[in-house]
Length: 146
Image (cartoon, rainbow, N blue to C red; front, side, top):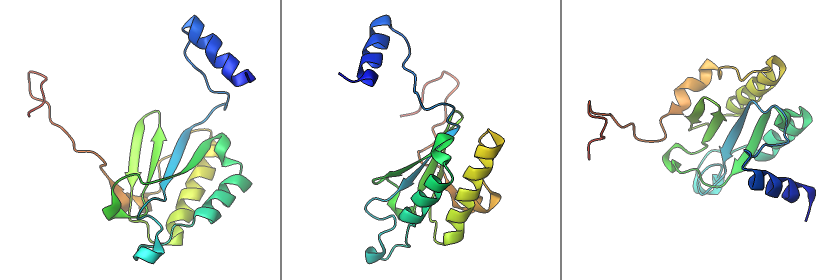
């Protein structure tokens, strides 16, 4: 049994909350590379996966803003989707078509790392923001309509 497995088992026996050894992570960027995103052979715009991963690695950004390349995140009609996960929740973006979109994302992650806090995403990306899930409206009695 490795040290990590042992630490997890001991925490579970004591009913302690599990903790990560990753230090102070501000947030996470999850980029879709699933059935549509980046699939140029299907007519969708490219996703600069290798470039983005290399930049993140060179800048050592994963220590503060983790980058995850994922399979399909779902909203395929907005190909080239990413979400930002933070303690405040998730923000969704889609329809990225140009390299400069990813340049903005990289610059934001670097600025957030340098500031030690997750900064607002660049305003230029607001046109690509969308609500991932249906918003429900609560009635006065606290029950959602069926």
